[in-house]
Every structure is written in structure tokens, then in C-alpha cells.
Amino acid sequence: MKTRAAKFACLLLLAVTARVPMWAQHVDEAGARSKVLALEHAWNQAEAFSDMKAMDAILDNGLVYVDFDGTLMTKAEFLSHVKSTHLEQVVTQSMNVQIFGDTAIATGTYLVKAFKGGKPAFQHGRFVDAWVHKDQTWVCVSAQATPILH
Amino acid sequence: MSLIARVALAIAALALAASTTARAQENVNGDAGTKVLALERLWGQAAHLRDIKALEAIFDDDFVNLDIDGRLMTKAQTLADTLAAGPVDIVVESTGARVHGNTVIVTGVLHLKGLDGGKPYARSGRFVDTWLYRKGHWVVIASETTPMEH
Image (cartoon, rainbow over all chains, first blue to last red; front, side, top):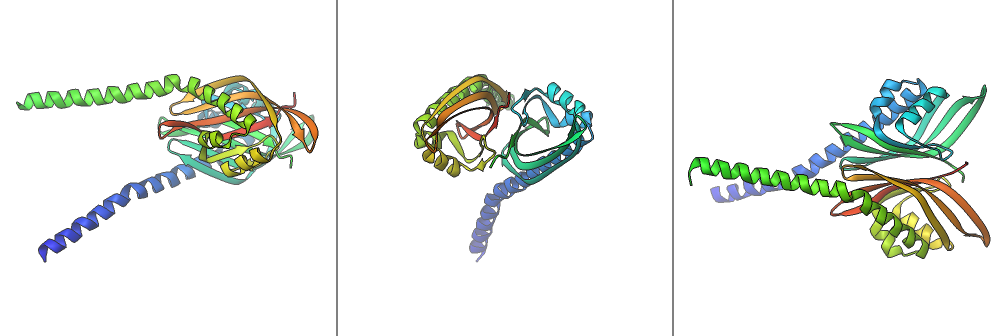
């Protein structure tokens, strides 16, 4: 009787411990996804308010940024571009984040309302951003915007 | 074996394990850019020849592709699109790679020439590809192309 109970307890323990890594991975992925999503929203806010300090923390120093018209920018060039552009509104939709360990890919669509030469201009496109977990935080290492033509 | 000898042996074993891991990581980082750029060339050839088997090995199963028209596609959709498209000449230039641990960001310009509905077309775009070292191989997890206006 005792032996059977001990065997059962061992099997139960094995089953539980085997599932722990899978469960922990699931929780880690969900947490990472939430963090990256929150950072994407924080980026939108920072860009709309030209908050350079917040953007400096979100974007990796080695960032590569490809703008709507195909212009390639470094982090410094992108921050300078944001400073000189007056964005009235940035709306992102259909956002999705895929986690690959310490790397994440965020996709979505966006609508930007800006002023160019005093006139309102709208941009509708799709974006793909790559994030990397570095020094205990997620930073964006590449971002690209593409107009939706279809 | 004395206690001191056992402790010394354990420390030596730990140090050896740590240095081996660090060296393995260094090799991945040191060679990463070169390997990934070689795979980029292979990808261009495979796309030109519509070699689906080669493309299947290059793309991660969770691959996301934002094409030059702003269409977001999965791996299966990208492979189907490659098969359905007419022959395309692809010229890739100005390629650079940035390494972030086990992730590499490749940027470049590509020129496409082909036939669409019997009519010739030529387009240029700026691309950003995200590569990940996964299960002993480099795979591309995201690719985006933005049409160049200038």
C-alpha cells in the first residue's frame, strides 16, 4: 500500500515538474508580449509629444529605421526627424507581437496625422518592429513603415 | 581525494564550462554578420529560381513578411506568392548587418524586374530583415520592404 502511494506520489511529482518549464515559458512569453506592446504604445505617445528622453530609452543606439518613403535613418537621425515634424495624432491598430526568446517582432497598422507646410497630411501604413531584450529591458533595434497600396 | 582538491576541481570545471559558453557565444557573434549575409545571397538566388525547398529552410515557421505593397504575409503565404509570381530578376545592393547577440538586422536596397500580367515592371525598395540563431541554424523571422520614392 505504502509502496503504491509512494509510486503515485513520485509519478505525480514527475508530471508536475515536467509541466513547470512549459508553464514558466508560457508565462514568460505572455509577460514579454505585454511589455513590448506597452513599449509600442509608449513610443506612440512619446512621438506624438516629442518626448525625446522617453524615445531615447525605447530605441537601441544601433537602431535602423526605414521611413514611409524608404529613407534609412540612424537613431540620431530619427530623433532629429521627430523633433522637426509636428505629429498631431498617431493611431496604431491590429497590433501583434511574436516572441522568439530574447527577440520580439511587433506588427500592426498605423494612421498618422501630421502637418506639412501648414496643411494636414495623412499616412496609412503597416509596420514591422524588431525588439531585443538587452540589459533587463526591451529595446527596439529596427523599425520599418510601408504604405498600404492594395 | 581531499575536500580542497574536490573544491578546486569543481571550480576548474565551472570555469572551463563558463569559458566554453562564452567562446561559443563569441563565435556566433563574430561570424554572424558574414553567415547571415551569405544566407541573404542564397535567399535571393532561391527566390529568383523559385526554389521552395531552399526558401522553406531559410524562413522560420513563424516568419512574417511585409512586402513592397504593404501586404503582411505568413511563411505559407510568402511561399505560395513566390510560386504564383512570374520570373523576377532581383538585384540586391548596399547590404549591411548589425549583430545584437543571437539576432542580426540586415538592411539593403533591392531592385526587382519582372512581368506582371504580361507587362514589364521595375521597382526598387529598401528592406530590413531580422535573422535569429535558433536550434543551431540562422533563420529569418521577419522581412519588410518599403518602396523607395527617391
